[in-house]
Length: 144
Image 1: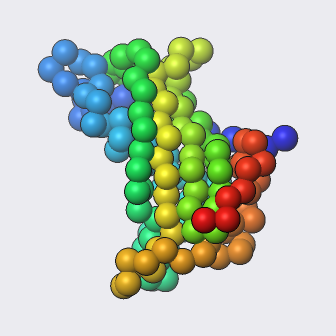
Image 2: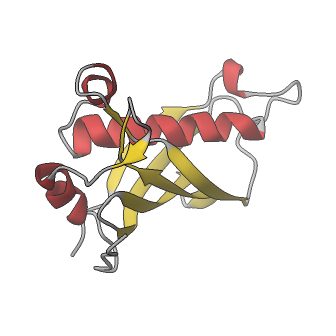
């Protein structure tokens, strides 16, 4: 059974439009926050150290999204993350936001591990890739 990373984000005034519902670009910020939290807490690999000290990064190279219900100020969203496919240099993720039992948003970002100075993809470090594989929801691994 694969792991699923979860954390919660309360919808704040800063996330909302004048109608008091989440303005859709703010969901992408919450998706990014989920990825950062996963690196820090789920993978035990500091997102900031990776970018600021090791000279590597994980830009999102593509993202799909589906919005299924509005979220309002004060809602607490439970964000879940699993890995759909894991390649040598990339990771295809599934990220879902729920409020209670109601699905609010699904995102499917693709991250690529890169050397920041060159901007070129490089293989995931084996320890990180091994931890990421525990979040694979279908066991799929890609060669990249």
